[in-house]
Amino acid sequence: MGIYNGTHHVIRFRSGEIWYFSFLRSRGIVFQQLDKNGTWAKPHDLISNATEDFSVTIDHMDHLHMICRSDKGELLYLLYNGTSWSRQVLALYEPVRYAIRYPVVIPLKNKIHILFAIGNAFNTGYWALQHYYWDETSWHSTEISKFTAGYRLSPFYVDLSEKHIHLVYRGLAGSKYQIFYCRYHLEHDIWSTPENVIHSAFDCNMPSIFILDNLLHLTWTSLSKSNLAVKYMNRPVRNAGKLDWSQEIQLNGPGSNAAFPRLIWVEERLWCIWYQTDTLYGSSSEDQGASWSTPVKLPNRFGTDFHYIHYSTNHPRENQTFRVQWILGNVEGILYLPIAEKYMDLPEYTPNPPSTNWISQNEDLLSLSHGRSKSETEKKVSKADTGMESIKNVLLNEFDRQEELHYSLISKLDEHSRLNGTLLDESRQMMALLRENQEMLQVIKRDVEQIKQDIRQLKSRGWLGRLFYSG
Image (cartoon, rainbow, N blue to C red; front, top):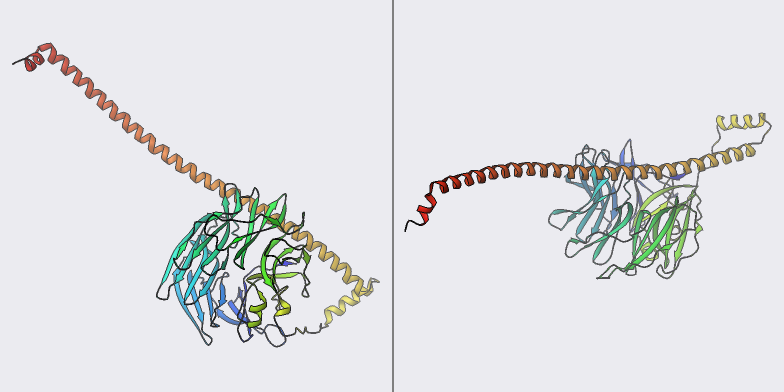
């Protein structure tokens, strides 16, 4: 029970055809098509030598754009024009030296923007956000920001408005992790200086933004007293002056741990969906985030396992009724996106009937030999498994928090150590200069004493008097 690791990208063409891209360790990046029974067909190999982090999205011409990294360190850009794939090597980052995480590709008209986080391959906790862009003639690159993120790098998040690419990420500010925001002006090719927009007394994580009706909606989690709270606020997109953010609102109830809050728009409602106690919860707003409904459990027909899915669509009805970027759903055999599912016109899922074999028959005999029915045995096993899974999830979550805290402390100690080393080097340089100055002063002092002695000798001989009063 829980959230599967890995990257899951789902694309829907204008025709309604759906492709699912994922990474398999034995095969690299593969893609599957949703068949008429609502299940995924067998995967097709796409890039066998790719690493796990990649991104794929669709543009207004129904072309696919992908960014990934080969196991040799090549930063690869791929384009699917509707009939075939082409690829281009943008740069080479040696895997033994550099780690690249969370690449994003954004096609805008005839320009292409690629963003990713890059850091030391040994996970020292220091990262930079890099931006590559194609201006119709050549590729350019620039560094957006450098920041400290600790051992666990939280995914950064982007969205688009008419004139800007908006970006949020988690970084260290003082002794706490905070949420930073900056934006890129599409006409002038300039990134704004990242600014801490939270200024919280607690650690913050998992930021997400969503542009809707000229408002930038921001959500994140905040750790307070061992509980993770889902927080929300917004600001006008066109605010040219000081960042005018609204007041913080907590969306989940007190004492309930939440993770992965993500914003979507469905049928004139803004939704925030998050993961909590092996299920999905959601809260909605009908007044652009000014007020939110009481959180409710979201129905799920496919168990308690969820995938972190990026969804990109050109389907006409979907673009009219909902908008989704990242969301928790299911791609295990079928496709399930909460809230938006009923507007997607997907093929009806028809599960196969359960098969019987000698193992299940032996289990029946074993349960009967102990004087218990199969249903009673299954109930007890199910309860035991559920209890063990819940305990395991609690322990894993606590371990993750402790691990992040420890690595945060290590990162801070490393930073202080480097600072102390710099101060020590500067002190040594100052001491060397002081010794050199002291030696020079001693030389000057000896020269002055010699001059004084020479003057006394000249004076005793009367030469100075004859020199100045000879006339």
